[in-house]
Amino acid sequence: MTYPVEDYLTMLSLAKRSDKTIEGYRKVLKSYAGFIGVPLDEIHNNLSVSNLLKYAHSRKGKSDAGTKTNLSILHRYFTLNGVVFDELQYNAVKHKTVKESNDKPLELETLQKMMDLSDPHGRALLSFLISTGCRAGETCNILLSDVNGDVVTIRNEIAKGKHGGKVYLTSEAREYLDLWLKDRDDYMRIADARTKYLVKTGQAVPRPKNDQRLFVCSYQSIRGIFDRLYDKVDGEQGKYHAKCTIHSCRKYFRTHAAKTIHPDLVTVLMRQTGYLDSTYVRMTDEEKRVQFHAGETALYITRADHRIQGSKLDDLQRLNAALTERLQQMEQKQQTIEKLDKIPLSEADKDDIAKRMLAFQNGQGKQ
Picture (tube, one colour):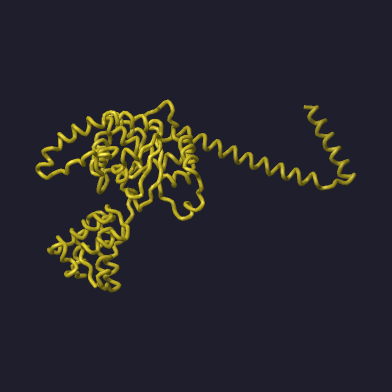
């Protein structure tokens, strides 16, 4: 049995794959259809291993990660449609990536400069991403009704892997969000007027009526906002893209939140928990919220008067480790003394101890 592309994508939808994943599959299959010169709905009748190997070769010099994803999707589709690969062909298609460090950490100073150049929309967006650790794809689909004070609900249908949950806003992020919400209606009117011509010419999609999205913009727009700001304050480029991207905000959250918030809770908030975390990390939503706010200062961007500086925090952590070690040594000595106290002494031992103490006191007196 063979599966035309549309039937295959429908099966993925029934298997609860996200719309974004399905669209990614469609894009790759369409790219391959264009490469071999057939319509998308005719790929299943033109499955050739030799053509797939040529397609793999055509991606030489492109991103390793992108090539691996494309070939993995195509290999799965070919296999599902009964195409058999010998060992050599399989190894050629199973693209191996060479892990390269193509980014750098997003620094606080860079974030502060980006905030300085932002409008209320950009400042609310940046502080939201840093406070919650949310993915950009989730952020663009958050609704006004998903926000309740300092609590934001990530619905399963917009979360990667359907792993939704609750995240929290720092007091700083809430302030910037409140300022943005005051300007939100004006922002939409200006944006609609700016894109009116693009909609007419088919270069843009009109905004949904009664748009309830918190930031009223798409993933591409959110990524564009970050990229433009980063380009102005730094702009260092890697091999394939800028050294810092919108995903750097999520990495920043993971790195800095763990300085003041227990790493287990940070992992839960990022919704990347493994089976052990989901089984053993038992906290109520209120407990998570309280612990988050107790350590939220590490996620402040512009509050210099409250923000915990990394170097000072590191010094405190080292001091705490040294004190813990000293306490353990004292406990060990106390345990040793207690054990010695339980050992009975003979009369000769007592006389010897008395003589030594007297000699020690006389020696101190002479000094």
